[in-house]
Length: 604
Image 1: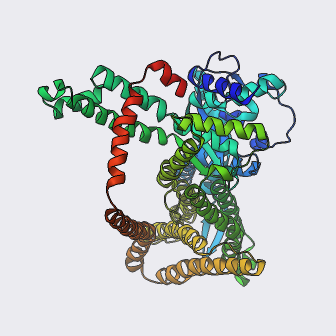
Image 2: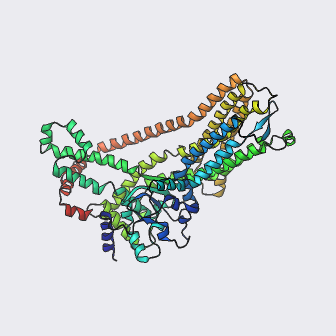
Image 3: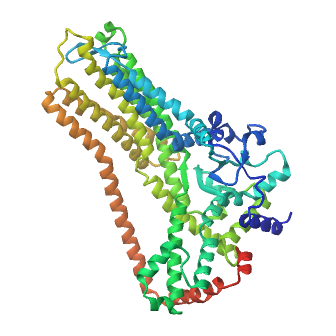
């Protein structure tokens, strides 16, 4: 099939999806089966009929690059789909374990020594065990559980993954499925991009993004303007009410005023539609998921290990505090362990913004020369009314640099901002450990009847636990900021120095907050230490938010200065170009809007 015939067939499938016999979807659980094994390029032949099912639309279109790691994409899917439900389920199990411990239903694990003064207290790990195990179980099984729950109601979430939804055994059906990717995107409610540094270098990935972003621009906008100018009335209830409120009857009946006002209403409605549509584009850096899952696994193992060490033989505890020593080693080892993943996440976040800001289709590669020409022809047809290749590609590049960049900033925030899912995961991990410590103080009267426990012990422990949770949140912010301030080095020696600096800064932060500040509060009387613990915790929680606000203010001020300087330069130039552009829009664009529908369909 020639390039012209192939392009026309693909364009026809965009306008008329046709038979849904070859449009098949898969469940999200199938996509994530066995650690995302389907993302592996050499996984072997797949049973297309058994894994997929016929569908008339897709809820999620999964876009990815085959050059990105399979495990990284699986971690990103866990982060996006399962992390928040897992935290909620783990927290519920943790609260249940806490209540059962306080009521004496769950027995203590043993005795631990708590200096100063050296006294024996009941030890407990129920909150960590029940909360942590529930968290990791739901994290892995959530998509399967959600699929079972939806199947009981007769509904099913349909996803598109190229290797599962396109027949790989039949060459003809495979080529037809590849050419129909644009039609599949038109039938998709949302698009999930598993972004890696290789994503924008692949031309097929750029094509998928081009079709999805075009979905709410050219065709709908032109039809909206056609109806508005032809019928001389707004096309939706919302714009109609606004027009009636803001326009007098004489202005509505005026043949000169009505078309212009209706066109403005149509353009305003289109802007709202674009903003709503852009929210359905979700770009997740895969390294964000890797960093989050790695932090959760290492942090949980270190927390449980330190708690288990406190149950060692008391004779060994008399020689050295095993738990504190293990915590110190775990804290330093944790800073070393997360160094690579945290810095890589910060670098990838910067790389994402740079790639979008400098995006050009010419830098994208494609294995097949025929596919390369086909994709460029499709992008041209979708984003250029005159089918001019330079104009169409430039229009698409502008959409990526403007609307996609705005979408990324809204979803991910600034580089130095902690992702909210990662924040709640780290806070959850610290909370389940601290609830065990609070439960120990409430278990003392029932298990040590001969021991007089002061009434302030529980309040002091609760305040200390609150500050410890704040330390973990602030430590995460400190790690991300430090990773952003240490750029990626080319030489191995310079990279080693950057990693050493990261470990030094984060270790010092933990030591200062946990040992120096919190240790001094511990020696103070309860009436003094409790308010200090609470104030310190509030400062740790509010500090990152204040820093984000200040950085946003500085960046906004910088953007305003750049915009004012550019406006001053524009004001110095003659205004002839602006008048020519306005005349071109009034004459050229309106003529295209008033063309017959048949010619308009041929231009897409």
